[in-house]
Image 1: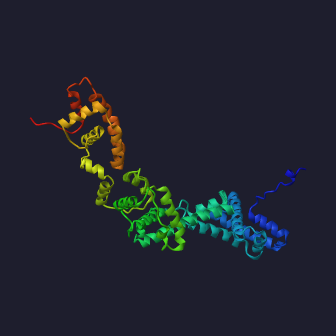
Image 2: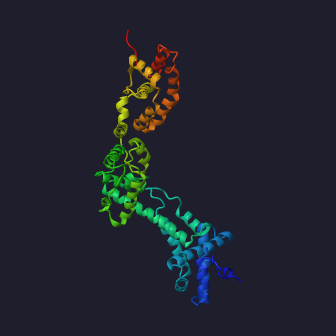
Length: 402
């Protein structure tokens, strides 16, 4: 026989309880009297478990209950004694059979009590009984699976605890956090600290905060000093430091190529922003679209918008209304140099409110520009009659009074 075949290892897939029982009998840690006591306890426990999950009168439910007890005891023994069969067998000898299944069940209860998400007020995906049902039978826990889920839930609990600390420090009521992500709270708290603030911002305050952070960042790179975390308790500092690094690497707050309104739309859901009133909404729009409001002067009808776009397309100062003389001059410039459509699109991208950018691009590129190119660049229209008629129908052209 070759070395390859001599080195084959046998994988024992039996539940840990069965391994422990076999080890205990083989090594005389467990005797027949103890085994009879375990059999009696198992019979009693099987009926109780079957009745809890279904009925104690059906053979299938009784068989499932037996399997559940084995899985619970296996989980408890392997976890408690770190896979040491001798110590596990001694525990079976020194303690009752059902105390081990209760130990496994208490482990599941403790695990279920831990949060399975970092959203405040989020209802658990499974009730306790459903959780126990799945973990003890359909998908019985291996020790590795248990520890993996335990670690994930403990991490969720740590993020929530850190967020609550930051919320308390900045005077945020617990009731305001319902359905907010704990990490979003920490993100905003770190940004507030960076900007020298003392409370969580509303939408306008958040926009101002981001604008200030962008203005103070050099070379388009945001740096948040670890010294901002010096007063954070050690049990929360690791979580906060991870969020700090995520902000630096992922959020692109200092990227000069992204307009403030576009940036806010990209990152706002990652941050906790307090509810604000109508003034907050109006102030936010004004702040993030300063240039747009400066040019349009509050006029939001398509005629005013297209007049502004025509001005930009021919390279003159944008206005919402032009005179007939200015309109004729624009036609001449178009016939000489064409439309600078890229300039119009850049203005929309950099200055227009985020929520209407797509509509404005469609208004210019799909609705206006194809017809404008047809009517304004018509060399047969020597006196600009059709060109002027088109502009008067689509833009604000102030007609001279007779």
